[in-house]
Length: 159
Image 1 (cartoon, rainbow, N blue to C red):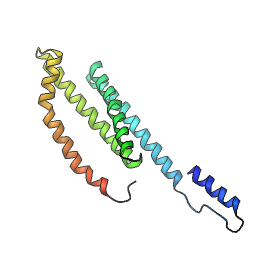
Image 2 (cartoon, helix red, strand yellow; image 1 turned 30 degrees about the vertical axis):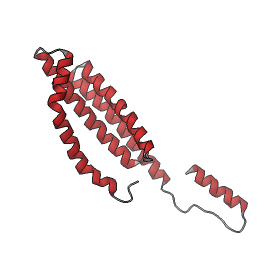
Image 3 (spheres, one colour; image 1 turned 180 degrees about the vertical axis):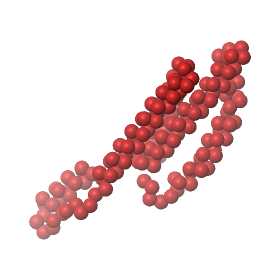
Image 4 (cartoon, one colour; image 1 turned 90 degrees about the horizontal axis):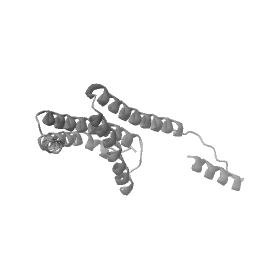
C-alpha cells in the first residue's frame, strides 16, 4: 500500500495535467483484520499449550504440543510459498483451525501412549501401539474436516 501511494505521488509530481487522489482505501481494515487473525493464531497456540499443561500436568505432553505446532507450521509456509499462496485472512483462519486440530491429535496420541505405558509397555512400544490404534481415526477425522472446509477454497473472492 505504501509503495502504491508513493508511485501515485510520483506520477502526480511528474504531470500537471492530471491530479491523483485516493478516494477510498480498505487497507486499514485489511491490516487490522490481518493483525487480529495473527494474534488469534498465537493466542490459540499459547492457550492450547497452557490447557495441555493445566489438565494433563505432564511435561512431555506439553512439550509435544508446543513443538508440534511450529514443526508443522514451518513446512506449511514453505508449501504456501511454493504454490504462491498468499498469507491472508482465510489462510490465517485455516492455520488457526489446524493448530487446534494438531494439538488435539497430539494430545490423543500422547494420552494413548501414556495409557499403554501404565499397562507396562516400554515408551517405544507404547508410542507405536498408540499410533497404530489411533492412525485410522485421526486420518478419518482429518478427511472429514477436509471434505467440510475444502470447498471454501474454491469460492471466488476470498483472497
